Image (cartoon, rainbow, N blue to C red; front, top):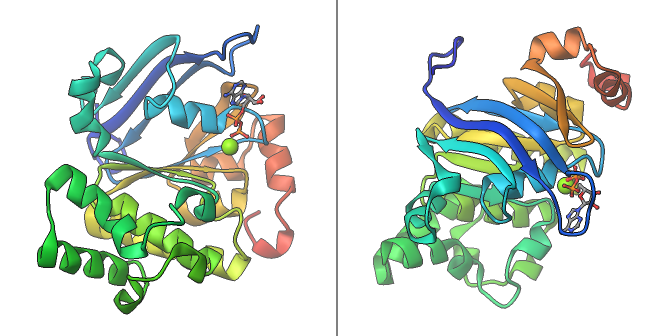
Length: 263
Ligand SMILES: Nc1ncnc2c1ncn2[C@@H]1O[C@H](COP(=O)(O)OP(=O)(O)O)[C@@H](O)[C@H]1O
Ligand SMILES: [Mg+2]
């Protein structure tokens, strides 16, 4: 299957996915289907608690799915053994909301960014150092600060470091789980710009989770709106934001200040 607008091949195809936690009577992710083409950005929006993070974790196989299919670059990854999954793992990365919590505070920034290269590509020494410096530079962090610890950086800088680590192995997919929600608006805009330029440069597809429709307008090509574990509305950003059909979509749009100029 290809993406009609861009004719990019489909990278991620999720079909009828269900996730339940032990002891819960209702599914948290309830029959979710969507697809994401290579090099494109799909916004996954919905209010707090609707199941966005759970869906993302199931896609990355960090938690099990009860039912459904996940196709990644043509392979059905729910059926893969842990060993076979390993080669897919490096091609899908995640950036979390809280950059402070997601970076190991006892590791130097250079070690954090270099770890995936060391583990997956066995790169070390001078070559590793150069790769790390170039990744930091690419993400707007002074490479001379590579020997510092995460707590010496601001929230926006920490998120840049997390992004540098996420793109170290040039993944095909980066799941961004509310990566700018904890940041000031001006810092947010610069991080979004960085993600856009990285997409253009490396052809990365983003599954971009947010509750902020202004962010969707800014960065996404397609959007899927989630409510109580289901996708209730989806399509190209222009169409969905101009002609919202679902009550939840309208509520999320109403939550954006008019000064943002998205309506
Ligand atoms: N590990 C877990 N065990 C049990 N329930 C969970 C777990 N993680 C999340 N939930 C529940 O699943 C629902 C969806 O949570 P989450 O996916 O984090 O929502 P969102 O990211 O959209 O805010 C919430 O009701 C939450 O309490
Ligand atoms: Mg969440």
